[in-house]
Image (cartoon, rainbow, N blue to C red; front, side):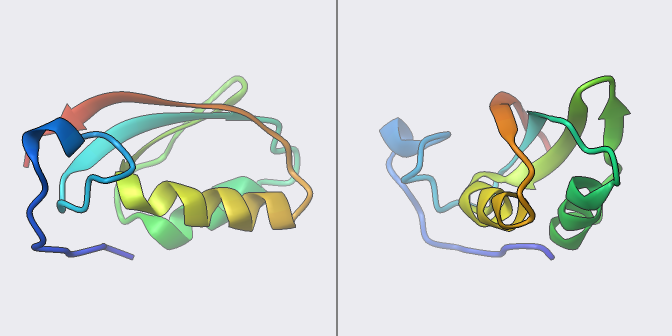
Length: 91
């Protein structure tokens, strides 16, 4: 799923919850995913490669997708220990 939004935002809003641009960022999701349920949920939100790490995943996403992903993962009773936004991805 790709989120496309052409609504501009102020420079101060970039990489914040008010960022409604179509920019993408690399995120790290720290969680325990024994049955790959969180992995399957992340696949629904991205066409990019998901990198599996010891305690989670790295994935490229639009910042506005994060709350929806968290709701989906939490609804499966999977604890998320942290989500870190690394860097903006250049197109």
